[in-house]
Length: 126
Image 1 (cartoon, rainbow, N blue to C red):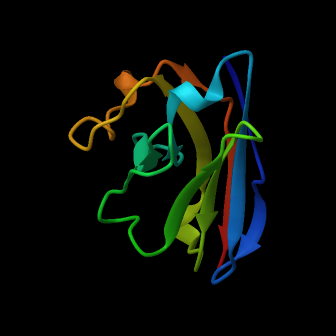
Image 2 (tube, rainbow, N blue to C red; image 1 turned 60 degrees about the vertical axis):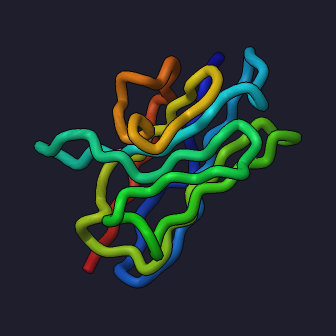
């Protein structure tokens, strides 16, 4: 499956932004999906994951309240809504796909995901 992330850009602190990740070449509704980000000089950071049905979501404490993951299986797309952006949110945002189920104890592990998109850059100015 191929993943294409989009929606990044330059924003000011306090703005909102919605990222999209479109999938092709596979059965999107059978994949759990996730968003990660990586800032310059920092490790990849887990932001959110969602089950194939969209019923279950997983967030680290650092993302709860500001970030929301959702999906539209009819459009083969997963979204990440980013609210109240801060300069420290500046990073390349990646989407990942995992065949089958996702569980809370492993959702944050990048190695469980089978496919990755190319990333979209979000820059937040103060």
